[in-house]
Image (cartoon, rainbow, N blue to C red; front, side, top):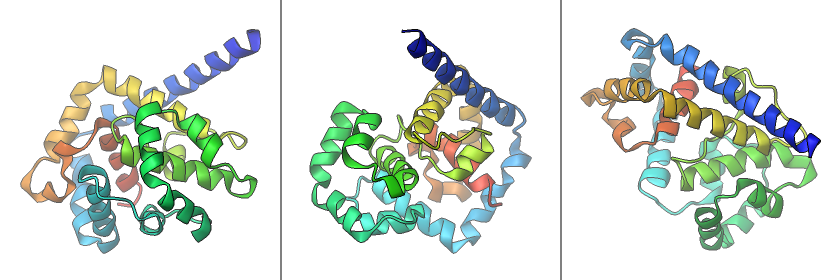
Length: 213
């Protein structure tokens, strides 16, 4: 019981740390600091990803897992692994929507020892695609931006920590999310489809694109 309580306290402490990091970044935001979004439309790779994201997340287009791997930049997953997800996709999608249990899904359908880190990233991005308002996509860029120490033995825990941190930030800082959405609602950013995007996506988009421009 004591070990469980310590683990829970550590989890909550890390999630609160994530929330505080986001608050620091978003408290400093102004329109000038969001100008980097103007550069996205000049980058074919970013536009290609946004087009894919909008089709699969917002328009609910069926996932082709080889295209999923390419567009999300997932390295190391084999065609054989991806084909298994493709064959069982309808069943797996219903499982994700019904249970919303990423740890159970990760344990049952992922986790080959040689690719555990890459499988965790894949799993988070799949959950985000299906439940974009509830799960963040995980990659090294986000971990570095939020100064999170990676959990090498259980990387899926990082998804849950970031998820909790995002949720706490969103709950307490609606005005900051509205500020970003209002700025990106201008006609020149129509391709982002920001008003259809989840609050989690707003945070992820800021860190993802902000690291490149």
